[in-house]
Amino acid sequence: QHVPHTEEENRRMFGRVPQDRIHAHDWRNGVTYVGEVPAEYVRETTHGAADWAFPVWLNRMLMEQPWDLIIHIGHVVPHEVLGFANHNKNYFIGLAGKELICASHMAAACCGIENNLGTLITPVRACFNKAEEDFLGHLPDVYIQLVMARNPEGRLVHTGVYVGDDLETYLGAARQSRQQNITVFDQPVPKIVCVMQGDEFFSTWVANKAIYRTRMAIADGGELLILAPGLKRFGEQPEVDALIRKYGYRGTARIMEAYRQNADLRDLAHGAAHLIHGSSEGRFTIRYAPGHMTREEIESVGFAYADLEKMWNHYQPDRLREGWQEIQGERFYFIPTPSAGLWSTREKLYHRPAGFET
Image 1 (cartoon, rainbow, N blue to C red):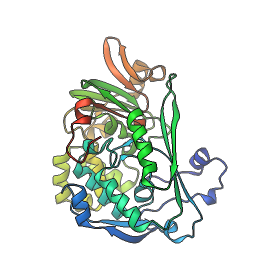
Image 2: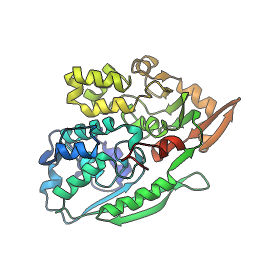
Image 3: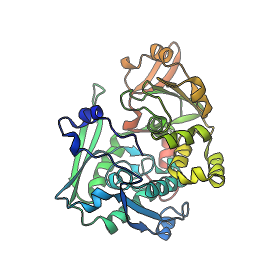
């Protein structure tokens, strides 16, 4: 569901690994059906929020090649669908087919993003755990789960490495991430300014992590300003980009109404879930300062707009570290890498419905 890497991006990521050894996952045509997580199990784990089965379609090469060893190396951080990223997410989202991605993301949206964030085992992860146990026990895999945090100089450094082939490997890393990657405020924050790196975040599909990871900290009537120098589109794929432009980030009620009435939203249910996750539900202003998109584009989907050059010169984020700042009498909280953590008030993090305890 993401844009495939170019050869240059592959070289930057994987170094001298030959290009013919790097395979782009095709979530529509390169998958095979392996079974399903039954609707009754989904209904039970989501506490009735979702009542459909998860059809498990996975990458054909993964399921049909005779692997000697499958190594997962990944960064464990708070996540909007699975509570924390990585582990079997690599299979059931990273190498999944359209049907599984749509079913799981819509279920997560129905559970509520603020219930999912920072929860060790969300309902969707519980479903993935069952699918791994039922269908992938034959795979010779090992998980290398990494935890990172900022050192005294403000740089992200490795603080934990967890290696194994079981759920406890994930849980150990997630517990450490919960301790190190969640910033808790006693009171809501009126304004947050953050940066989504220009060499990594090219679409709101991924740059909206700035919204997901900060929404539980922002005060009613507050503002989130996202400096996004690489932003040039909404979706990672043309059909999802068109969906976002058509429906916008209008809040759960309007998107769910549109979902019931429009086949294109039901066909790309993960897109509908994304539109729900990316709305403040009218609670605070989301203001984007994009590098390559116009005011008209940004405002057409329900966000506020700011001029990137003016905002960059005003805030000078390269000179700031995470924390409270004040510029020309304006006090705000600065976050240089929102994708690396979660920010929340104590109330929202620790007073959630049963089944979503942090």
